[in-house]
Amino acid sequence: MRLFLIVSVLALLSPSLAADSKPLLPCTIYQPTTNAYYDISPIAVQPLVDHKKAHKDDRTESWHARGYDMGTNFTLNFCAPVIETIKEAVGIKADLLKNISAFYEWKGKKYSIGQVSTELVFRGRELSLNYTNGSPCDSPSTHDRRKLKHDDDEDDDEDDDKKKDGGNKDDDDDKGSHKGKSSKDDDHVRRKSTLISLACDQNLPLGKAHVSFIGASPDQCAYFFRAKTMAACGGVKEPPTGLGAGGVFFVIFFIFLAVYLLGGIAYQRTVQHQRGWRQLPNYTVWASIFSVVRDVFIILTSSCGRLLPRRQGYNQLPSHGRGRGSRADDENRLIDQLDDEWDD
Image (spheres, rainbow, N blue to C red):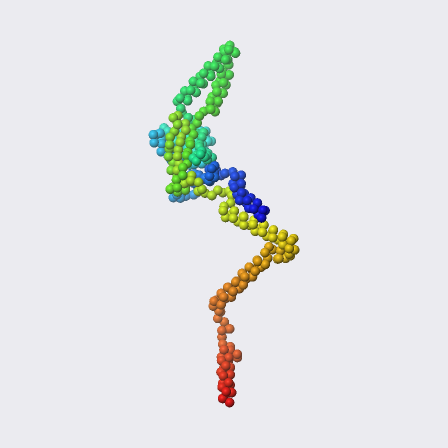
C-alpha cells in the first residue's frame, strides 16, 4: 500500500514538474499567484502566404490605435513584427526594419517605437508587453543638455592637452578623439519604447482585440497602450506541456493495476505456493466473474439467434417417409386401434 501511495504521488507531481522544467512557448506566461496559463499568440497578426487567399476572418493589416491629440495614429502588433512593409525608419538600421513591432508616421517619416518582443511580464495582476530600441528620442531639453555636456568635455580636453603638450596637437589626434566621442554618444542615445497593458474582455472573440492609446511621456520617448482581448483572460488555451485530468487518471489506474498484479502474483507464488492461473490475486473471484459473463453471453447469443429469420432451403420442404403427415397418420391409426380394443 505504501508503494502504491508513493507511486501515485509521483504520478501526480510529474506533470507539474515537467511543465516547470520545460521552457515556455513565445508569448505565453503563467500567473505567479494563481498559476493560470496565458497565451497572447491568437491576436498576433501573421502575414499571409503568397499562394494563400485571405479568409473573411483573416486580418490583412496590423492593429491600429488612434492618437487623438498626438496628431498621428499608431500601428502595432503583438509578439510579432508589423506586417506592413517599412522601407525606412528614422534611426533604425536596414537589417532591423523587419523587426519593428510598433511605429507611427509624422511629416512623411516613420518612427519606430519598439522592436519585437515575445516576453510577457506580470506586474502584480497586470499583464503587460514591452517593446524597446525604437527610433532615437527627440527631446529638446535632453539634446541641449547633451550638447552642453559635450562642449564642456571638449573644453576640458583642450585644457589638459595644452598643459601636457604646450598647445601643440596633431590634427589626426583631434579627429580621432572626436570620432571616439561620437561613437560613444551613439551607444548611449535614448530610444523610443512602448508599453502595452493587456486586459481581459470576454465579450470579444478569441482572435480579436481592441487597442487604445493611453498617452506618451512628456519627451515623447515612451508610449502607453491598452489592449482588451479574450486572450488575456487566462485559461483560454491548455498548456502544451503536462497531462490533463484524463491522462493523470489513466496513469494512476495503470500504476494501481501493475502494483495489484505484481504484488498479488508475488504473494500467491511465495506464500501460498500457487502455480499457473491460480497465481493471480483473487483467482476464484475473477474465475466466477468470467463464468458469469460467459453464461450471459451464451444466453444472449442464443436468444438473438432465435429472433433471426431462418434461411429458406431444402430443410423447409415436406419430406417423404416420417414427415409431419406421416406422424399424423400414425396418431390416427393408434386412436382407431384403441377404439377397436375398447369396443371388444
